[in-house]
Length: 283
Image (cartoon, rainbow, N blue to C red; front, side, top):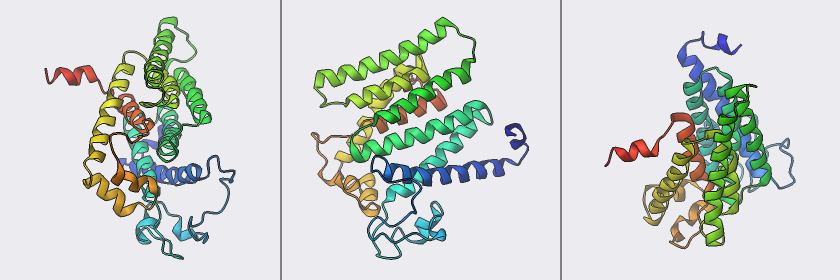
């Protein structure tokens, strides 16, 4: 079935993948909002302010948000811009995965991986914690990745390479957590490094670790810049304390690190980003 999909025109393939990504992104928004709240993900979608149930034409990813101008039709309260970004981000990452892996099993695996990583990133931004259940899910996906890539033929050297990369990444982030007593980085970030490091293996895990700090530094500098473009966008379109907190961001502010790790992981995983090769260009 997947092989037959490539017979369709490229524009149709891309449009279909984007459409699936938007639908999954919309579902992930529900998961993120209701995760660990005791609410069922099967409940009817509604406005978070007034509780007005959403009608069918208000459930179209991206389109409904734009048509409603980011506000509830009932009470007029702003709809968090996060909903728009999660849908758009998921669709974009699905398309990038398709472009890189086409219709292989690795593409299907990557879709599940992206979905879980999206939940981890956004949940960490809002709650400053990475649930153990999500890390366990990534651990299962890491095991499946090994099977997809290397099949049932077990080679000790390859397995040890991935296992060593996983342990090395955990020890590095865990070491920072231990030395700083949790001020620099959370222990959840160290646990997150286990499945991500295993998927990448050595030596790619080195680029993953370094790049995560590069991204963190760039974002932190942007937030410290005050009313810069990023800050303006957050203040203009978001309606929650997390997004608007950029105004009070200082050197002592806590910043969730999982999103930086996930962006770095995706850069290495999808495009083979190599820190050493990039650094050599400037030496």
